[in-house]
Length: 173
Ligand code: ADP
Image (cartoon, rainbow, N blue to C red; front, side, top):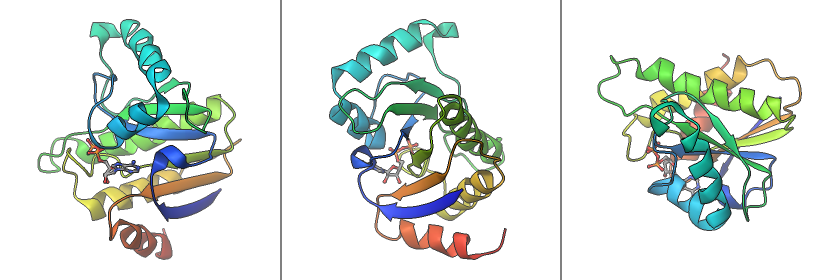
């Protein structure tokens, strides 16, 4: 599986699936979630409404990953994963963040995707320290055994984030 790092807007990427750093409401929000919903249009929102109606308490669970179509986006699927809100790292955050990556990869494999792009989940409003989050992202992707996936893109957005990923990718796991 090839791992690429880019800086840009994840909504423009021509991959089979993009991952949305969602919240448990699964109906849109700020940051990358807002950007994805704005670019995808109301079709995605309506699909998310249906998805949420079928979930216990009409909410998603942190660390899980939920698949929808992609509305007007160039990708085929959006995988919505609520990341953990970072408190101090002692409340299960590392495992929950790893679950986001692993469950998203599983959803992509279920749809026989060959490529997937991730944003830096939880590192915006949810406050996860960037280096620790990047290390978990890379470790989890590297330890995944792909069947259909050939390419994973880490889509950074803020200046400096790409360097963090490159630093960890150059280290032997
Ligand atoms: P969270 O609530 O999981 O922290 P945020 O959306 O606040 O989610 O931030 C997650 C990451 O997504 C941050 O690194 C932020 O800079 C980045 N981001 C924001 N908009 C985009 C976008 N259009 N494409 C890719 N990444 C984005």
